[in-house]
Image (cartoon, rainbow, N blue to C red):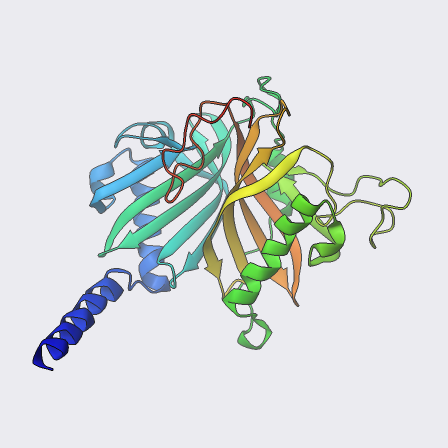
Length: 309
């Protein structure tokens, strides 16, 4: 009996320490996010309050302190959106940064633990990046459209908010629609928008008989046939209940024999009244030898089989 009580007390203390390590409210997350971004702009990892085991990737490549964005980012850009998830102790940034004179579209996942920044995952998209076939400068990219269409930062009234589990399930219906090639599955508002690195991928004419309720034009519920076999590695890393926004990363794995490169992306979903209103993505196309997404439980999963992209 005494041994069992001792074990229960030890377990309680351990759980308390683990919970305390992840205890970071919205103000705490915002403070760490702003401090980290400022340190990146100043090229000063020592100012970012990094944990001893801190790990950072840029487009899935592990970056040493002082390299990559630490060296290249000179300022935050013209588009800046921040999202916070105390439940997962993670913060997200979506928008742009300056790489010298060049403005790039980015998404960032930042994790906090033990009152320090423990992880940073960057998605960086440049106008000159390879497209889906690997050809340089062919990635979708439209900064002007991004600046004109990104939704305003918002706090949704408490009575209009959906629970986090519902937010995730609604977003997941979008990926189910892609893998099943059936837009009727997607829980989106008719006319919902979708932008990839600012480039609009909706409002194009649909073939006869394909309309699902948007006056014969595509929206976020409809998909072109671009050879996606599975939407893998889905990580709902920020579910911001105040903003009713979800940041999720994933990989589009192609069908066997399809020569198109894989997409690795973060998408930001804004939802209202049980439906997706708009989607904004920051993404890049990954070559065959790139380990994506390179975060647990998928870290280090490469090289990929040559027959499966």
